[in-house]
Image 1 (cartoon, rainbow, N blue to C red):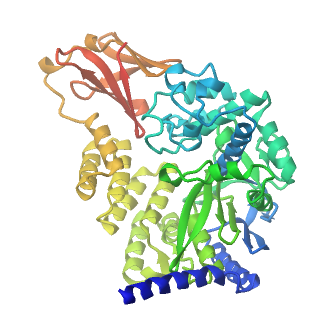
Image 2 (cartoon, helix red, strand yellow; image 1 turned 60 degrees about the vertical axis):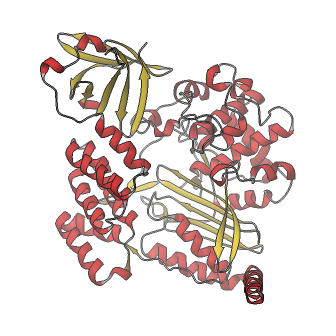
Image 3 (cartoon, rainbow, N blue to C red; image 1 turned 45 degrees about the vertical axis):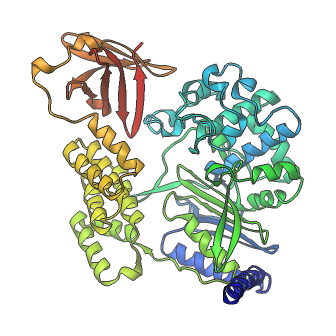
Length: 577
């Protein structure tokens, strides 16, 4: 017993020393290591952007790489970057301010503040549910038409809420966590309704101006914005300008821009009563389901024998990746803003910096195997790149980041460049390198299905379920495949086309009408062209040009009662009217 107590005390004592050590080593020693680390990431082509690290009130700030590659303009600490989902913490702050003023209740419902919202769901979902991603409202950014259509159009908040943030609930509010941009979009609309002012004006008056955040605001492409960073992506040939997104679409869930310096002002304000009372800040930083507070994830990072409390959130939007990590035990902060999307996980960088601040060993960056193979692919093709991968894995694996995500990143760039066959080759290599990864099989299966190779997609889905029977991605893929495959029955076994005729509401605003014309089954969604539904099985049909697969549902009497739509990973059920 005495030995166990001594061991326990030793661990606690070591932890106390560890947490105190950050105050014993000069900040400049920490910053020298931080600079060396980030220079390594930059030299390897893994980070481009701006960084600010605070350590006991001392500041390290620096820009890496170019804010604009066409004019060779470098990044700096005051360069302005799109924030993506870091926006949510500012939206949450406005809501809490209105709660403090008695204008909103956290247990109030959507329809209490937006009376035009559909009552059947709006009467169930609370403000707390919206803040904590537990509403059950489907995220509009996960819709199959988000990138191709929704993201490129301009919407008023009321229009987007009605069209794309009012879907049927996916689960009972409060029972599950499901990250949802739609919920925060609705919160922005509520702010406007309560205050009678545009969301961006309320932000400026209540947060940005009081805190002197002059480099922060709602991003409008048409605005001449000094020191605005350009966002970039990468494809097989190198850097390209990122794809367009209309900033009315991310709105209160992701449309702000800021600089590293301004975000540090924000970090400091959250230790005071400048924008929120102590009681409101306690609510904001209280972990709920999946450790999500109001606009922040609340967690603990293991550091040696201790754990450091972290309050953090990342952001990602076309051409940009962002991260803010608040180390509240020492009131330190790590702010990483990048104007190149998905080159490296910013959390990997922040974890190394956290270890540096607490005088612990940290992992130095390694050359990305995806970047290495991409160069070879561009110069000599797929076979040469795969041969190089095998050689590096066999002889120099420690020199590169050989993690599973790397080959997936490479494949995603090829898919974006419409090089699906080459992407499949690298995804097959990924399943070979990680034979016990269900996710690797699912990723491969999805691209097979996109290519119309259902047999190979089915094999990949079955293998994924063998590895992990509970894998959600594998279960979803299998359901999608089962709705599109099967032997075509004999003609006398087919359900007559006339039985499918009717109207099927896919969403409250999207009606799918099925008719028979000239011996063909035709489908038409609200506001869209009429297209042929080609039969794949007795109850299975496909609209090939949209890769949309429909499985009709019938009862015991053979009456068609509904359908299921599977498209781009989306699974939508609709009852026949």
